[in-house]
Image (cartoon, rainbow, N blue to C red; front, side, top):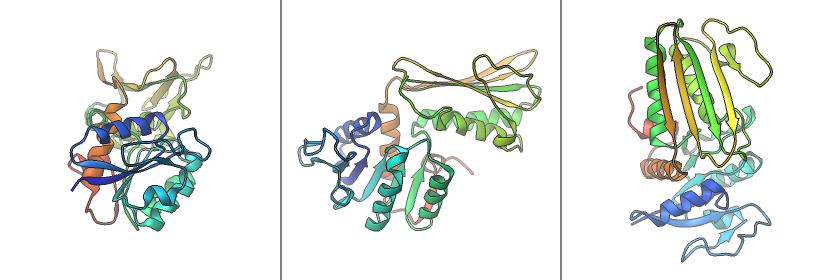
Length: 262
């Protein structure tokens, strides 16, 4: 039987990409499509059998798994509805507050949850490569992260860029909050040894590009990922949903989904 999936944030860019991925899949089907209250999508067909709704209960009624790409403003109410429905969760929402992140960790003690700032298989491989490089190269190599997204992306730096920073800092036995230096135009300060530099561009229709550079006085090592379109993230979210089905309660990451060693 196909896996029955509800999509939260179905009217957004990522939600639409997930709907397309489900439609193209042989082993998954759409069970619900939740959009914001007052959305022009409400009542319109999301698939042959499912209409868009702004009612969480209606979207979750027959779902086995939820894929969530809502905005942070809708996160609390949607996550509570999932908890009440006892629906396992794949969460790709970024820009969450500390309180929301902590709430999601708590829910991971009651439901099976996969949480990742980026669902792309390629990006998660690059996270691993950045961790390996940072652990291998000394702090003589300055670490820099360039984060490029479309002009409408709200969070800056992105969750993906911050996760790259976490991987680098962790491999160096540092805390990212202690070593991150975010570059802003017109403001320059001397770089500190061991810092993780970060800068961001928001322009055009770029779905996502990240370059991690390790730069010494004698060489540069670069790790780069560029998404051609949002299907890369949607395919990863669908892969996570398949993996999560039948898993025990717990908070998982895409590293777990992909079988990376701890």
